[in-house]
Length: 322
Image 1: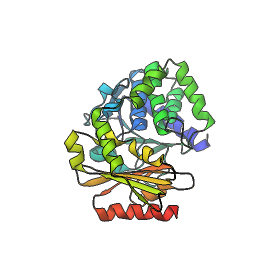
Image 2: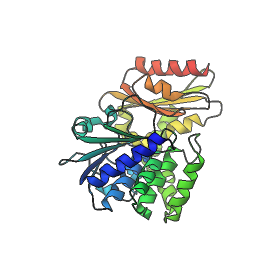
Image 3: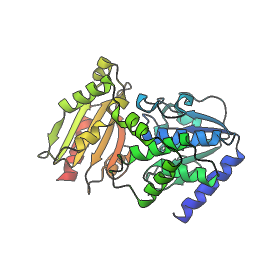
């Protein structure tokens, strides 16, 4: 751990201990890392008698509603807070409708593991080497001497499993497994967690995934694959963005594919882009060109929907694999 990171953990722990009312928020279109981290930190602070409000602009996706504490997450900010904590948010626009209210809080902390340019909080608690924000939350709770209960451990482990692609991605380090060992020792039901997070799918999810795969198109002799899901597709089966979260990984797994992109049109006329890549292809840099970010091999961004914009992204990916 770097000296700056250790100092930031201690600063955050001290500020949280001194605070009474604490707001914790996820990013828009939340994934397992941000929801798991949000819930773990929230439950941990509730256990030491802090008044905690956990919020998510888009709520908790159905696939993560099995997580302990998910019923406590609100979709609007209520009351005032002494401290605001944004987990897994690389930029202020990822707060969505909460951005203005969050930034009006006097003391704000950005808890993240992404390399980013938009440091929108007063304090940063960032470890770019962490496999998931859950690792940072684990260390923050340890610094505060919070007991890692089975409920807290389940949320942290979900964060790590999801953001490492079930330990398949290159962001894993030895420390990741040491933390996971401690979490399992805390009493996590790993079989139940994996079954709920990965193996259970609704009919809606399967139909949308099928539509996405049916429409996939290949470029550069099969090195780039992409697919586009429009709003009518979601409305036809009453689906959500979260229903196709995993498709980009499935497309990237196709033999010969070096880069994959899934474009999902939202209700506001924007398109959310999920990018995945093989070793040596930095899709985080692609995402940054469009105001997004992420990791070397897994990233994302949000842009206004138009086929012109979609083609711009595809063209950049094609250049990278050439």
